[in-house]
Image 1 (cartoon, rainbow, N blue to C red):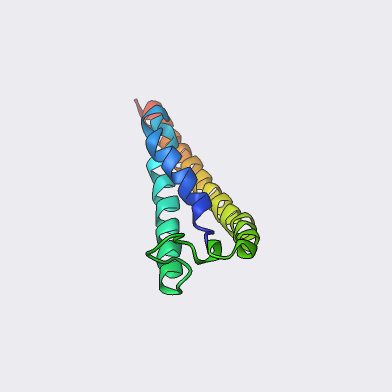
Image 2: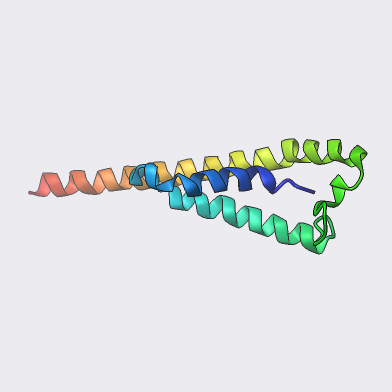
Length: 111
């Protein structure tokens, strides 16, 4: 229904604040993960009819009883998806910074 909204919200925030985040954190990688995942889920929900082109746009919001189900989906699917993106990004950043440090150490020992 709206599980893509959790990573989408964080993606909007990190995209707006990306210039304030140091380059060593490779925030572009994180943005690619969350925007790509959100876009994929958005398209899937659009195809399945969970997102419509007329208000209220999310089919679950047409019936107030379905709103609780939608919020539960965001909590149980969207948040774990966001946490998975954060985990993958953290491993990528750690590996990149580790390898960069190793390369610098190798250059210093040869000089």
